[in-house]
Image (cartoon, rainbow, N blue to C red; front, top):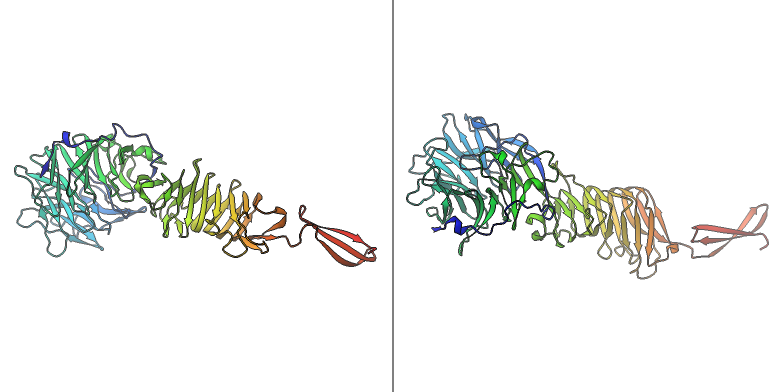
Length: 589
């Protein structure tokens, strides 16, 4: 066992107070968990847990008549109680949706169970023990569970931490080893890498943070000083919790030195795979005295300051965070989930996680904001919840790379499912952008040389919008096109760029096509070609450009009969500057 006094072990204080820096990392959109409630257990401050599929676990109702329940995309689903039982508390959940539950039966026996595939499986009691009360605290993606076992009733003290390999066959829990002189232990969480964290104690008020590994359940690999506990762990072998009134983060490599740092005042409740930590600013039994915080990198943020639209919501706690950076906790309006509005921090490719706020590559639940950056679009079909490019007054560009980018808010009330290209934004490249509503106040420039942007939905161009079309030749694929599957509202400026044109412009080119077209461009601009040599046609579903059929001052001789009672000829001359035919009648010819 490796032991250290906390005064020597904890280093690298991030900040004395929560940072006021907000926009660099992006904001959060908070949403109510509805009737889902939390129920913090003794020795555990957390109200809610969330998995990496954005499913939150808790319960509906309070005390011993509560029903375990899950929340997903605004829908709360109640789990049944154990047959003839009174209550079931939802405590942990993994990515397959298996819920770790504390329940009772008709004889009021309290036991641990899991709920999966529509039914319960109870956890057997440890072998050769008098345990009659078992409550799981965490379940990982391998189905391994950890928790607290006792023979003294509801969280009776002393109890012992247990590990369970998974309720298959006759597998029984194993009581975790503790050093001589200690009488009690609690295991709060097990990561996918098998790092088990919790605390041990010599008396009810003398806990010490402790760490085990699933590969060696009898040995504690680390123990801190008094008045401490680890609450959460991740697969990077990191653990977070508290020491006294300080939130802490420790790293436990399989080999090498253990490192630690302070996360400021309070208690850290959760840490995700991206080493993003969350917690409460004050370690207290009264959540209203605290505020939720989030730590990423070397900066700690007040979560309340990161809400894009608080609507009166005050975030008291931050209980858990998943791999998407979504945070759950308790507020003055009940349970909440905070969804990160991902901001682009630097130019580069779509999948560079370090260049997105909170280290999160956008996922189907993400509102996305690109400012002060040039970003190559995704290389695989990708869905996000909302898209903003160049709205803040800084130049930004998104270049599609031939793969569909879908913007949809299906079942997501906090997102619009819309695309907005701001005054300083540019949408470029080749590929499909699918959205019910694409609003462009900035620029659309299809192609990286010549190519097509397809908008699977509706397009609205404002009077500040600019559409840039490069015409390099007459053949299909040698000029830019814009295709809209539904309606297009035109306005702004259309620029035709012939500067790289090869050959003679002698064909009609269909530039824009849509299910329906309304409006018109306010002006047309031409590069590399005489505007007098082209003509533009706009119909209800198409905009095309073609060469003028008759050159400047060309003359056509027509024989006119019966005109004014005589016979003669008229010269018809095309004037490009007026776009009209001019005629001169000569009866003496």
